[in-house]
Amino acid sequence: MPGLTPPALRPLPLATLRPEGWLLERLRLQADGMAGHLDEFWPDIARSGWIGGDAEGWERGPYWLDGITGIAYLLDDERLKAKVRRWVDHILEHQHEDGWFGPRSGAATYADHDVWPRIIVLKALLQHLDATGDERVVPAALRFLRLLDVLLDEWPLQEWARSRWTDIVWVINQLHDLTGEEWLLALAAKSKEQGFDWSGYADDLPFREKVDEATLLAMKDQHGGYWMNDVYLSSHGVNVAMGLKAMPVWWRHDPTDQQARLLQMIAALDEYHGQPSGLFSCDEHLAGRHPSQGTETCTVVEYLASLEVALESWGAVEPLADLVERLAFNALPASTAPDEWTHQYVQQANQVICHVTEDRVYTNNGPDANVFGLEPHFGCCTANRHQGWPRFTTRLWMHTGDGALTAISYAQCSFEYDGLSVDVSTAYPFEDDVTITVSGSGVVPLNLRIPAWSTGATVDGEAVAPGTLHQVRRDWSGGPHVVRLHLPATVKAVPRPADAITLERGPLVFSLAVPEQWNKIGGEEPHATFEIHPTAPWNYAIDPDGIKLVREAVAEHPFTKAPLQLHVKGRLVPDWTLEHGAAAAPPPSPVTTTAATEDLTFIPYGCTNLRVTELPWTR
Image (cartoon, rainbow, N blue to C red; front, side):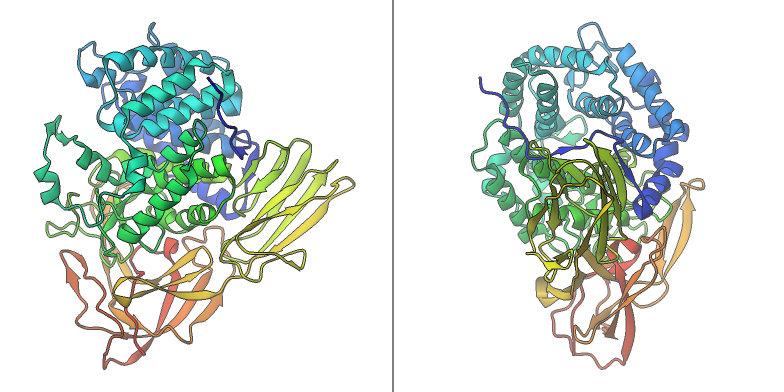
């Protein structure tokens, strides 16, 4: 049996790259906020069945461990590393004799043979191995996968694991890279065979309109309180985000048409369900292009993870790299409160009020789905959301098989790798200039991604083509040597449905910032539950001409204090109001209104809590 096709890129070993600037402060917010303390007060982590407790023993503990492991080692935080070691030690020391991980009741039910949360645990263990070299991880992982190879013959993949086989194969690929064990390839094929057909889904997207509750009820197959038929599972947004990983992980087994298929699936999701932030709607199911339909926070981080795996397989190809930045700089920060202590279950592009309401636009989310709190609507995102920033950080720079280093994005950071010392100084994406200082010996090529939107980009003053990788090949001896990138962007009014528009500049989407008031409605500080109500009008039509960009100094928390503003002229549209507890669809443009012209301020989407991102236009 042939081996795996090598990926184009591999991340640097965990903790090799050190975040700096605003990215460091963002990770520190996570460490000081919910991520770094969830195990101290939330029963599903503090008393998790995964560490011998009496609380939830399914996916929440593994999700939290997967996120906090990256944060702990990227920050070199001894407090957090001790938390990781406690969990890792317990999981490894309590592995069952047959190789099974985690809680087991002994019942002859699928719940006692569910592979899905064990795969999340393996993802966390592989991160821990990458940072520490812990020699226990690989033998324990192989024992589990040996058991899985037998287990799948008696208990084939069902429910969530059937939809999420893509992560099973990703883990198997990593173990094959580490060990060369050929039997793992057959296990990967068996997992794919039992899993949902994401390739066929990509070839012909089956859901091109909002999947409403009537559709789900019509296909109802009651099982354990959930509707576990393929309609439910394959229209569920988090599953779709994970399903995108199918093409890049299976490309390593069979490279035929996988990249084209992934791009086709992304394009179809955007055409029928796309939101301005780069997300597709899913609350919890694919929900069309209405800008008040929400997107679950788990979908944000899982979409990012699938795209990052695609970049590893194929390199810094567009539009995948651009979409990673779009999600990371807009949707990811918008899903949480500025202090990282509360979050939403769903975020909206046009999010003009966050409140508990029975009259809601969502398909099947609860009345509290868009408030900020500890676990609004459902607790999966409470545990899972923390993986987003550390995974993005570890893939800022990756290395190639021929010894080159490739820059995917340009947040401030530094690292030493393979005899080279690299320091990246920038406040990107809030400024256009990036300074890379390199010291070392010998010739190590640097592949610098030039974003597709940056017309007029230069490297050391020389023009470079947008949407390409520009290679800088020098002898870095006798340094330090400096490489300067200039990545200019222009403000654009991008068409949206019903002739609405969204304002963009480079990877940043801009929103009308709606003045707000936070009202505590329950829970305990600092992770209490809050509604957010507007204190001024939000229903404007804007003039896309004459927009003025205003810059301010970039603070350590730029998603709290916006360093970029767009000053825009607009007029109230009184007939544009709430509908089903959210902003109604923007009225068709151009809008005729007799209201007075006002000066409006737009700031980056990720800097907002209440916002209007798709607006009608007027003259």
